[in-house]
Image (cartoon, rainbow, N blue to C red; front, side, top):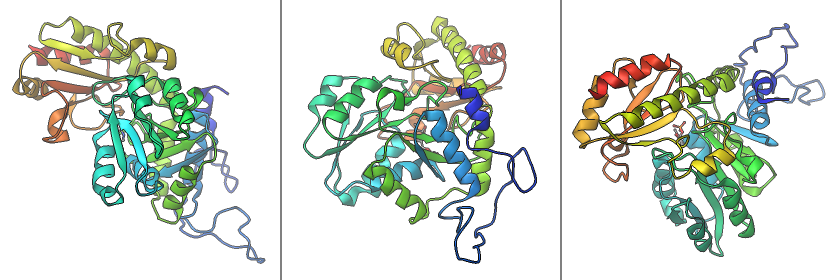
Length: 372
Ligand SMILES: *Cc1c(COP(=O)(O)O)cnc(C)c1O
């Protein structure tokens, strides 16, 4: 089945008790045992498994072309569950521009585990290859990256990780399965913040880990979820799965609109640089064309001038909302350096835009008046 069909049907069936087409929300924390003590419907206690969570997991595994998925209460809880599976002293190769929350978890939550981390430019395949060590267990990729939309060659990284006997994981938050399916390129597991495009309405937090094959890091992440208790609520699972119905349509419209907005910004004299993988002069464009079915709804621009100039442009928008996060129906604009804190490597004159579902002309008009 094609992705639009899976988005509506995978993991769902009409409720056998009532025939309800929209799934009910199963709030019960506990499930009845049969007289023989068995659990005939497969559920016993909601931390171990819940109907809404199971539907969401089955659906997301199908969309990514994986065999199994684990849903978490946030993207960071999914990341945390993966890192927790490593042994003290294990080596990780991670992008030098990795999502700042991932760097924080590795450094602050797992600092005492003495993980060995090499933050590497993942677009430099020779550097990634040279960075492999005997204790390398995890190769982390994020593509497109945040906020410069750098593109990493997924099959090339998957091959390097496989030769090293390390597990490769792609954070695909910026490019949900409509646009990119890393497992098809040989990557072992995919992680998403479902708070973003997959939920898509800025009203529920979640994360997911999807695997292609059984492996020890996935099994340990399952323990973090079920025994460690990193479980999303049934209502959050329901909201995210409801968002998935429209994921393919939303993301295609957002990508189209972002491409036009990027082209408008490129021509504007107040804009010094535009970062969008759909543009022919983006350094990752050839790889993006190969491994993506569209270039996504995220655009970053560097305005001509200082940090203050960028903040002033952000202050003038009327349709865009000044807020962090991405992937929802509302267009957002953010001065990225100020949320990432003093250690940020993000240019001070950069504004990151998450294109929502408003009319493209209206959005371009808003940016035009803000850039005046
Ligand atoms: C938001 C985000 C995360 C973290 O997800 P949360 O749902 O906020 O915990 C991880 N990676 C990327 C690329 C993100 O944008």
